[in-house]
Image (cartoon, each protein chain N blue to C red):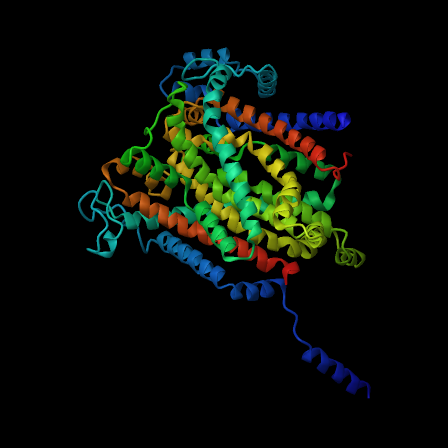
Length: 300
Length: 311
């Protein structure tokens, strides 16, 4: 008899609909949004291009002369579709290499900003007291320095080049995440599930990392796409101001070169860089909004 | 109220000291020896030592930081490396130029985007709304440099509607010089602002008191202007006030493209020539302005919204 009941309850458990995690749920909702899905594919395409460039499979020969200087876009070969620059190099190749630079900057700077923001934000929100005071003072201080000035200053003292741009952008971008995570931790730390974890003997680090963090991490994902976008836009401005990448093409240096070319009627370098950048920033914009909607459990 | 203002001002002190510390660490510690950057690689050690002594850089770092704090309090940021003129004087000279560009740009884009957001909120959920949302997202996504280059090339160079670049305070000329930069400013900020204010308006529209107003039989125009706009003023004031210190840095690229000798151009020049006194002064002045406007925002907030109690 008892075994039968046990079997039956096991059966019931098996038949019960399987719960979906927040991530599965978000993915299902995101998939319903066709536009967001297209944007995700576009973004993945840029990332793939960047990886291929990194592996040296494409655009490693961006410096090769493929024709006359400033030849306009033509269908002569696929390398000519965006025309050539002052040295007769393919603008398409330079644009692809620029995509690699932009993706690298977006990814690496976010990878610097996110951990700093998450760790400081969780500590401040969870512990409160003087730790909170100290961290709040720190991020308020950083956020009170206009970000373009902070980024330019960091880029200047760290020296020119890709690495210093990455660090500069990362060190200027963590404040938003920190503030967000701190607020969420303050809300979550008194919730029942955290108290339950505590009554079961879970220590501070267990409660922070195993219990609360997974419940607030989706906000980081949403923020990530906006961070990424901001980094791409700022890299272009930095490169234009001469504090950016040196010796390799980026969308910023291409636009900088276009400043002098436009008077001669050469618009394709500006056009290619603008198009490449607009598409990916637009995709990230829409994707960010869609992710925010998809990850918000209240909007079900 | 008085206590609140005093407390906010006192809280600003550690923030400003923090900003000074970050600026000091960046340029005097991380950046290496400013003298070496100034004189280049080929100076004799004796010259370097003399310069260091002259600039007080041979003293211990904590003492140098105290010196820097004194500079901030007395508004004495020293002389520019490149022009040898007083840094603060240079900034004060450039400020009116920047404001001539920034003020009209800011006001026009503000009025345009707030009216557009009311319009869009009125038509929420319809095709009009969708078109505006799509257009505003598109407008944000195009790089700002592209707008500036295109505007300058097409409207000034090709069509010849405006002078290509330059600036003058002469009342007969000032308008033609700032017209194109202001126009580009408005286009640059419209998308982002429309999106922001639309969210603000929609947040208000979904409130209960709006439903009450409608069920009283008020017409939609009265609801929009008397109820929605009035209550949306709180977030609008916050965002407007906090943007003011950024007006000058926001015009950075515009000023440099149109050769307008304002603070933005000054800043770019300073970074290009590693003019440290100028850079430090700009960072400190703008950060302090930002702190001050933050406090003003808080005060306005409590004045506008009676629900905000001052603790």
